[in-house]
Image 1 (cartoon, rainbow, N blue to C red):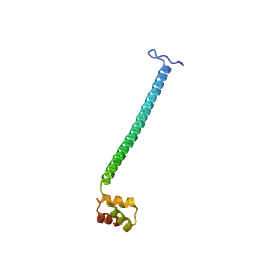
Image 2 (image 1 turned 180 degrees about the vertical axis):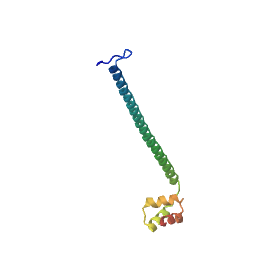
Image 3 (image 1 turned 120 degrees about the vertical axis):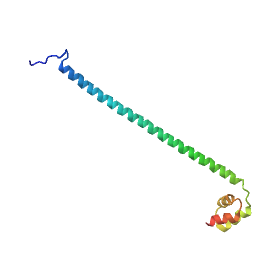
Image 4 (image 1 turned 120 degrees about the horizontal axis):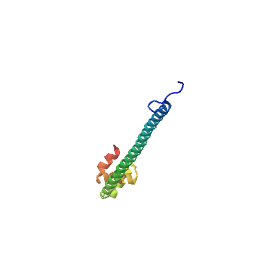
Length: 118
């Protein structure tokens, strides 16, 4: 009885090989699921970064549009040359800064000077 007899027509050695093969296949399937999850996660992360970049770009463009609208509005304000010269002399600032401050304060010299001193 040195040799093993097949049980129900199946040899023990063959049975062990099939179990080992099945075990190996299930490990490969598990590994495949892990890599699929990792790939999905990478794709999702990439989407999040691109969405965040889009939101940031939208916010920046909106701020730029608001800034341009404000500058256009300020350009409509009439200021006197004498008022600009007064602010330049008194505060010793550039013409553009004096004019901008005067426009922000709707041509009011006193309010512009107060804003520059604070």
